[in-house]
Length: 561
Ligand SMILES: [Fe+2]
Image (cartoon, rainbow, N blue to C red):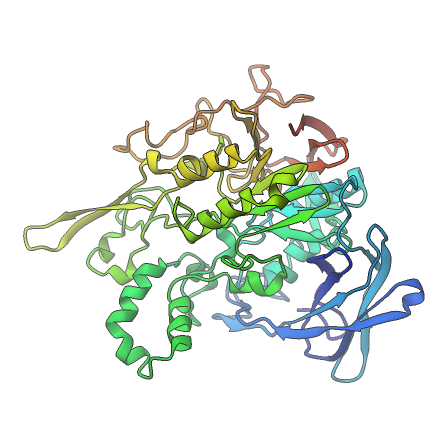
């Protein structure tokens, strides 16, 4: 927990327009007179609007305050956190000005941040450096990654982050003050403290002072989604307990009289949210562009010469094994078979994206609009990989097909899930749409490795999620986990299941044990980051060996067509 006289985060920038930008920060006190002072001698100021996060909690597995082992919290406990946001307006495009924020506590003491700089959206034609990142999740190398990114590039103009910001989004300390030092905001604000220990030589990484100066745009990954709400079950269990909205609606309909006897639509909506899944904490923390159809969940924006389309394409991650006790991606747990309220429904998709869905139609409209068509750089980001050597691209991104075996008495004997590859919505529906609209770069994460691909028509694919750790590349003897009896044509154990060859990095690939260049970075010692430079139209990737502590190496570069 923060002591009384400090802010919970440094301020950070959100949602710039041509002449304004929002400044956001958090405190653990309600306080008064929260404001931003800016400009020459901080002569101008603007008052913030304060809201309170509605779902942030800690529990027995939180690493916060003095709690290192399971002691301080015995069960989920609400944690009061206030969010302050002020819009600084009438700014001059292209001009950066200093700012700082102040909050006044109940006892009258005021707390002021350090000084940072803000700017509105850059005008078209401005050369920009944009950090492309994802999958931080408090992993061991995240702070080193962001620190090296700043040391290498200086200030960024924006951050595009393609999901999985923390592990369990309702656990407050994962965002603000996990006591192992690697929470989301500390890493992105240069206030982290993660220690790498190499043969007794300790190096402290502080992360990078990035989002105080540059707006961050994010996509929803599976780790932004909380499952069914509870004040008893641990936060990890709740995170694992997402339930399809449709299945929740069926339960609701059966019990509507009891759950909502006045038939209040608000009561219905709240019940459905608490009994399926939600992204409330994520949405409450960030102020992002919005679409009419998807609000903050999927949207598009223009930033300098870039038109960025952000999709909500992520599904529940479940374990692959077929053990009797597994509520997994391929089966229901033996004890739950005749109790549908306990089913996991496999790797169900949170927001439809298949052809004909609301999101798909929105995407079609966006891609045919003038802002997209006229943009110099056309980019799409989504959490789930269209092409990857990583594990998480299998099974296919499609609605799980439930297969039931029934006993003679009508009871259920087994439930399995299949994921037909020909119905992969990203490959079948979304990719052709992006390709025919002239998208140059598709950016994603989720599998925790760096690799990239180019389609025959020249569309680039980049997965830059080897940031904090790796889940490996499925190449050669390192096979994806697919249970026996699942056909390997449909569930590829190695390579890109969707038919592209990974591109060998153009400058300095890592070498395999056989002395041949590797077309990926999948390492728990070497971290990678990527930069889009709109001045040159290039995407450059850098790696840094956290064990050797050698120089940062630019290992790959490609140009957007
Ligand atoms: Fe993910």
